[in-house]
Image 1 (cartoon, rainbow, N blue to C red):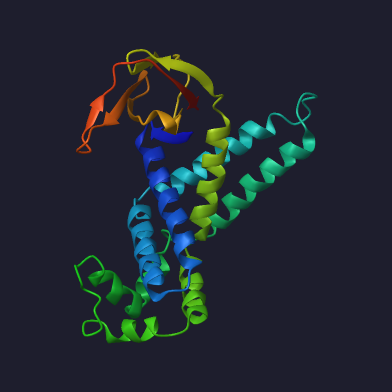
Image 2: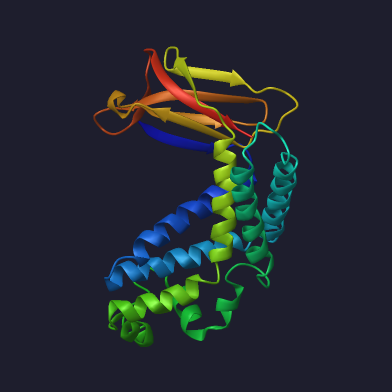
Length: 251
């Protein structure tokens, strides 16, 4: 089964993009080659660019505070495990604390590094980080993997509070949606969303053996899924037969 996720508002779209970049960064920094560490730096710069949205930090702090209040209301409820509740609240409070302690936007402190900013200014230029353009960066790439990784971990540490907050919030969001099995009749499925609740994320799972790809659209009132299949030239075309899918709508 392959899972696809579709954000139902711009805030969740930004969070998913950042989660994708943090996942890529984590995989690259664990490797040893200079090329992998080059793209780890590129990922870090992308994270800083996405996180530069003026209200992102405050939005995440508000969401963490909202979840904290919601979960605190379950204290004393005989149907809720106190130990599990305490664990969740502990994660929320820790994520809030470390993010709230960050001065300014995530990664803002790195802008004072002339070395990093020289790389950032040229990394989007095709071939712009060649040794004759950035000899200091080329020399850094020749150092052993452990030294490069140590430097990267220091730089990445400035954005890790953001990563922790995202991990907590997206985990809580995903846990809020109960999966259900439905059938896409003629390759299409549409569902109206209940009024009175705000939904943030649609999660769809499709059997990869079917060879289909879901095209998803949606907003606060309705979600729509159309199953597509690639032809011999890679162009996606709608399928006309029925297929089962699994979906969860998370609030």
